[in-house]
Length: 242
Image (cartoon, rainbow, N blue to C red; front, side, top):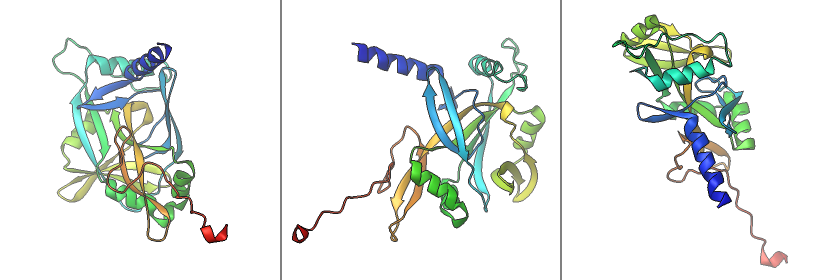
């Protein structure tokens, strides 16, 4: 009976710390997160905590998906609750009775294959070692952000979006129209409403080393020959050596 109560409490706590945006579940917390950041993700009592450990170097731009959705009462409540931990948080003028609501922007990594290639590259050897040594790290794969109307207008005028790494350990979002770069957007951590984390799937190379093979939602299983954990088979002792 006690075990059932504990499980029920965990489910309730988890539900209280998540919200649904465009049919996807997002977490919210006072943690400072960044798209593409790698770190530990856990639920401590009634609060989601993400502790960043590293940021992969991107030699190539990574395609991302950006959507614009209307704010609602629940999202506004979540965003206001975060203001208790951050007095510099950008204010959102939300009035439920008005027909025109503020809008929220979702930013999601689309080119998973490209990001996997970047993480496995020689210039990210330190990140790959961190991942293989710990095996419990996650990656921020999507954000829900409250952007100014001017930035949202720029997004609506664009037809392609990329995560770029032009500065040391700093990502920006590049906007494109008709194959040409038109503008950039910086994501201020104080505008982030919620986030999604994803897990790594592993595969053993011909050389015997383990590489990242895929990045999947933390609730999804790894597919094909990929594995959630790195496993090394123990060598059977030769009977002739006994």
